[in-house]
Length: 261
Ligand code: COA
Image 1 (cartoon, rainbow, N blue to C red):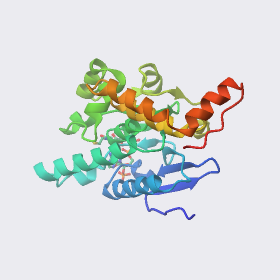
Image 2 (image 1 turned 180 degrees about the vertical axis):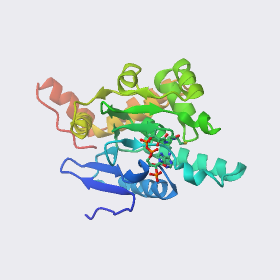
Image 3 (image 1 turned 120 degrees about the vertical axis):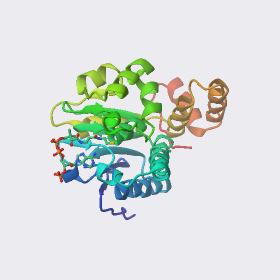
């Protein structure tokens, strides 16, 4: 199997099936321009078809930034319809990450601002370096977050705090992001990727279809159909071989060997 190559993304696949995707425009703090968005979209399509990829670790190149936002230089020509189109495109790509059949973990090294914070929020889990900084500064530019930030932030940290952060554009440091649940853990100095990878490996040890179904159930929490969907997904899992293996392994006091079917 050959890995795809990109101009703005570095790609590496390890023996565990963990694909490390590194956004690679360090001179522009990995800002999301059209090319990065398109390549990210292509990378997601590849992940979804390549069965050897079990999980994705997303990070940014350099020590300063995960992603410092959408590329502001590309905003100069935006008008009503192209603005809406851009927002919809960003939303769709980030939605594909959230809906991915693989778990995605963001390893947040430095600034995660605007589209960068939105990208990290679309991942299922987030680990931060001690210099991680989150912020949705769009109102300072006369805009609002447009890649799902107004929707995901309130769901992740509550409407009240999301309102404060978005209306003031205030930047939040790593400790505060951890405290409010936006980050799941802080990595020790120099151990960001290692810590993110360990978290992903813990998920990959579990039954893959159960993990996928858990994501789907959680993504629909709070909706009218949330409970019936949970029951339906639970029922689906009862038909899987991994469910039988999980139960047998427990009763036989051994570790389960999940095969993903
Ligand atoms: N879009 C386009 N270019 C960006 C960018 C963005 N979102 N964020 C940073 N860059 C570019 C800078 O223009 C600069 O390019 P240059 O060297 O060609 O001038 C380079 O990245 C380095 O950034 P710089 O501002 O010099 O670094 P800094 O350490 O002084 O400040 C930030 C870092 C993150 C505080 C600052 O870059 C910033 O505020 N960026 C914009 C954040 C933002 O508003 N994001 C939301 C966009 S909707």
